[in-house]
Length: 154
Image 1 (spheres, rainbow, N blue to C red):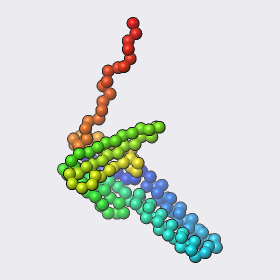
Image 2 (image 1 turned 60 degrees about the vertical axis):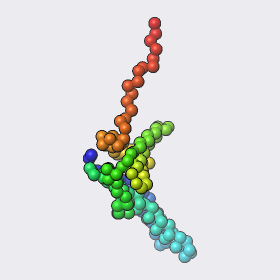
Image 3 (image 1 turned 90 degrees about the horizontal axis):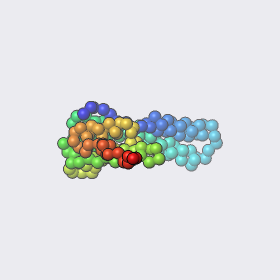
C-alpha cells in the first residue's frame, strides 16, 4: 500500500472563509461605531469561525503500510491497524451528476471509521478503495461483463 496523506478537499476555502470573517470583524471594530455587546459578539464569532476552520484545515487521514490514522487539530485522534479491521464497506453513489464515495472501516472492537468524499477528494477516496481491495478488505469491483441486452433483428 502506498503511504500517503488524505486532506480536506476545500481546506483553502475554509481557511480563507475564516480570514474573511476575522477581517470583517476587525474592520467593523476599527472603522464603525459599535456597542460593546456587538464587538464582543464579533469576537465570539471570530473565535467560533477559527475553531471551525482549523478543524477542516488540519483534518487528514494518513495511510501507511501498517495503519490508517485520523488527525485533526494537529493531533492523532484515531489509529486503526489493518490487522484490526474485521471488514470494510464501500458506498458509491452518483446522483444528478454528483459522485460520492464512502468507506467505512469496521474494527473488531470499537467504533467504525468513516472516510468520505464529502470532505476529501473523490479520487483519493477511490484510490484508497482500490488499495483496500488489493489488501482483501473490500470485495472486488463489479465488472460489466453482462451479456448484451439488444435482441438481434432477423
